[in-house]
Length: 151
Ligand SMILES: [Zn+2]
Image (cartoon, rainbow, N blue to C red; front, side, top):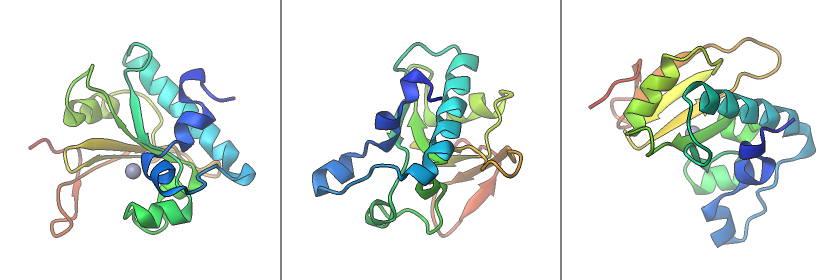
């Protein structure tokens, strides 16, 4: 079941898709994944004791076409319905949010502080446990850095 705050509509919304008239609805085969993501976001919200609406989803599910349009990496977990890019101004900077999630017991698969601007968080697929991998990226030349690195 979807967490009420992180519903299917919220997790499939994309400003880019709306602007470009793209269909970004989640295929039925990926709905189980989207529910896993919804529950993970709900557990993060609960653990961090965030008020309703505080954890904002900028991008959740992406169709292949949308992922290409927004320059997402190939095989992005967004396209599997497993990843969301989130911010939480109520809590603080994206770096502060990433560190708070990293310090929580929440079962995320990957947590990536991206360009210091948002936090990419993913749920593990059903067939393996979450890795709780923490990474940061500031530019493509330097690539992924180990851990949550605040600059
Ligand atoms: Zn992402």
